[in-house]
Image (cartoon, rainbow, N blue to C red; front, side):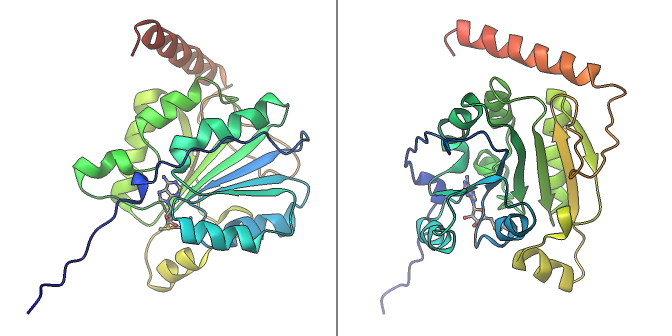
Amino acid sequence: MSKRIRHHVNPLGILTEHHFEGFGNTHDIIVDIGAFKGEFIAGLLAQFPQYNYIALEVRRRVAARLAQRFAAYDNVAVFDGDGTRNFKNIVKPCQDEGAFIREIYVNFPDPWPKKRHHKRRIITAHFLQETAAWLDPRTTWIFQTDRADVFRDTVDILESLGYAYERFDAPPYGVTTDWEDAKVARGETIYRMRFWLGAPVRTDDTPRIATRLADGALGALAFVMLRVLHALKTDDGH
Ligand SMILES: C[S@@+](CC[C@H](N)C(=O)[O-])C[C@H]1O[C@@H](n2cnc3c(N)ncnc32)[C@H](O)[C@@H]1O
């Protein structure tokens, strides 16, 4: 009898490289890393049609369905491939053309529980350090998970890098996905936080945020230190 072998494919083995020229306007941008079926972006799009949206989804077929879902929207751009690997090539040109990256969502990321696989997680110290070198420090990251271990590990990373973070309870703008709904239906706890390098942005349609920073100065200092560290590393040829 032949043995049935299941191959576990690491989707991050997909090395597709993307470059994006931007949307051709300076409207604020919302990014969803690991957008899956796109319900989260659809929920935000319904409330905030004035923004541009970037959906990053590593699984090709899922990304293809996402692209179909949003084909009629000029303000939604979908990319397959590893969102962290392509992040700078896709998001920085938008910022360079004058758009503010308003929010970056990492909702219910794959947990990769084994320590040797932690580097496959979306939020890693390496990814945040790379990003801090160019991303506007006022950009807000939003992280949501049903995994206490992943949440704790992510908090550890943020604290080690000097990010400010704040936990919150309700789904952002009331938007949930099937994934979250299923977890909640099973009675699981959802852990949520926002984090930033610098002071948070406050505008009329952003819920007021009581940042952990007294006045943002600490965040600004942490930001400068990270940039210096990054510059030193780059000078070293690493
Ligand atoms: C557990 S699902 C959650 C989906 C969605 N964010 C939600 O809240 O319903 C995680 C998704 O992230 C995608 N993903 C994992 N690593 C990724 C990466 N590095 N870049 C882009 N997408 C990724 C997976 O393919 C999957 O669709």
